[in-house]
Length: 553
Image (tube, rainbow, N blue to C red; front, side):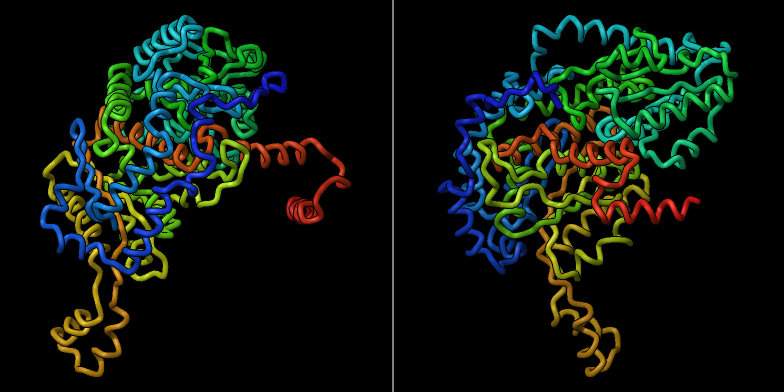
C-alpha cells in the first residue's frame, strides 16, 4: 500500500474508456439471451451437430494444446464472447498493460511483471537499479551453489529456507516442487510460510545451524508472519552457533527496505529489491524467485523466464479468437456470469503441480475477488469464482464424486503435462481424458438400468438401484496439454493464467492488481497484538481471547 503522501486516484485513459459496467453492453445482453437458449442443453449434443468441433475448438501455441470443445459454447456464443472483449476495449487494455500505463490505478502503479522476463520494457528510471540488483543476485547464487559462500563457522551452505508468505511463498514453492528433477541436491531449498511454529520446526529438524541460510522475503519488511519466523530462525541460529556468532552470514533478504533489513542484521549487499510495479502474486519473476534460482541455477531460471515470455508475446499480438489467455478467460466468464457456475476446479495431472491450485487460488481470488468497479460503482455481476483443486489422479478419489453426482455445476480445467510413455504416466493421461469425457457425457437412468440388468440384477432391484448410478454429466471443462513439465513449459503455464486473470478483471471492470481487503484483517491483527486493553475490542473477539487465555494457563 502506498504511503499517505503518495495517494492519488486518477485512472489512466485506458481505464476510464472502459464501460461503467460490462452488464450494460450489447454483447452482455446477447450472451444472456444465448444462456437462456442453451439452458438445459447438453455439450454432447454440440458434438453430435458438428463432427469437426474437437478441432475447431482447439488452440495451439508453442507446443501447448488447449481443448475448449467440452465447454457449453457454440459458434454464436463464441462470437458474442469475442464481441464482449471488443466492447470492453480489451485490445487497448492489453497494449496499455505492456506499455506500462498505471493500470493499478488505486496505487498509481503499472503492473509490469512481464518486464522482468523480457516481455515488456523496463521503465527507464528503474533500469539501472534493476540491472545492478540482478548482477548482485546472480553472483550471490553462483557463490552459494559453488560453495564459496559459507556460514559463520566456515561451513558450506547445504540448506536454504525461504521465509515468506502469499506471493513470496506460493510461486517459488510451486516452481521448486514442480521442477525438482531439474534442480540440484545441494543446497536443498525449503519453504516456511505459516506462523504456526510447527512448520518452521519441521524444516529446522532437517537442518544444521552452521550450514543453513535463511531468505527473509518481504517486500515491505513488515509482514507479521515472515518477521515472526525470521526472529525464531535467528534465535535458532544463536542457539546452534553460539550467542556471539555472526548470524548475519546466514541471512539474505528480498525487500525494498534496506535500512530495516540492516537493523535486523542483514548486510546491504545481501538485500535484493523488488520493483514497486510488481505485485506480490506476480513477483515470482523478480528477486522473490531467488529460491528458484538457487534450486535450478541461472540456466533453469532463464528457461522459466523464456517460457513466460513466449506467452507474453502471444498474448500481446495474437488475435482474440486465437489467443490462449483470452479464450481461457472468456470461457470462465461465460461459465461464471451466464451459466451460473460459481466454482472452478483446477486439476493438474502431475505430482509436481500439486501446489498449482494453491498458487492459482491466490492469483485469481486475490486479484479478482472484488466488487468495486474502476469508477467506484458496485459490480452488477459476479467476479472471481471460488478456485480449488487437487492433483489428479488423487483428486478422483477425493472430490470428483461431487462433480459426478452433486447438486452444483463446476467448471474444470484439466492440466496434463505429456512427457513419457511410462506405463503409469500413460495411465495418468488416460485418466485425465476419461474424466473430462465422463463428466461431460454422464450416465442416464436408462443406461444405468440396462447396465444393472446386464450384471444380473433383477428388474425390481435394477429399478431401485439405477437412480443411485445416474450422473447428470454436462460439466464443462477445458483440457490443457503441455509438452512435458520443464522450466520452459512451467513458465508458459504460469504466464498463461496470469494473463487470463488480467483479461477477466479488465472485462469485469475491476483493478486486478490491488488487494485492500487483505489489509483489513492485517490491521485488526496488529491492533489485537498491540492493545492490552479490552475496551475497544468486539465482544465476540474478547470472549474468544478469554477462552484462549483459559486454555493456555
